Image (cartoon, rainbow, N blue to C red; front, side, top):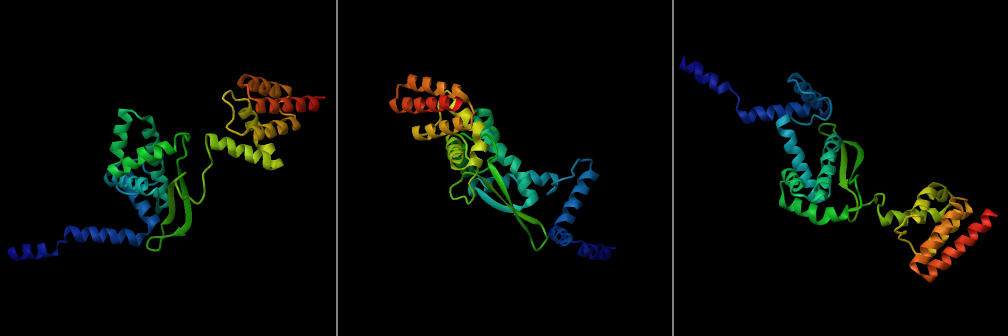
Length: 264
């Protein structure tokens, strides 16, 4: 009857009520329970989802794009640990594609970053910053704490080499050579650890980006430890002669005499 239809219509929940009920149900399940619930639903539909199934398939990529926009703009965001691990691969790929500097790769970047401000920051600030760094542009810091409402593990994801970072990343390029020379000359442990790299740096055709005094000390320590022998000193002598620099020639000559004395 009409009365039964009206009473049935009154009993039907609204769409907003269903969404709120589902949200409260997932929160009550907790973080791990929600993750298992989503992964089980994906597997029942024939999808291979056993790890980091954060949202239903039609929502997860939108979540990743929004997180990438926030990460590029802020350079550092706080989120759950699985979300940070999932977005890290896209954050690394984003800088890799932007450094290619071709119309095709620029189109891929534009399809990932929907914000014009984020794209401007990426091309104007981040690409020059990572000119010498080939990979490992991001860092994940595990907070080792859990969110109260759903016991989700929390973490921080950030881009390295940004201004004001508390823990600097390992240097690259010329800064790496200067760091290695400093550690090499500081302690005996540093000399044992960085000896092969210092030897390769001194034999480099383009030369090391170091002062003449630092180069002389590095050569002297190499000869003391018997690494390279007379060949290294002779190579440095010929290099100094080709440059025609008096300080470099004197330093190389002293290194050559030290090497000869050591070999005797």
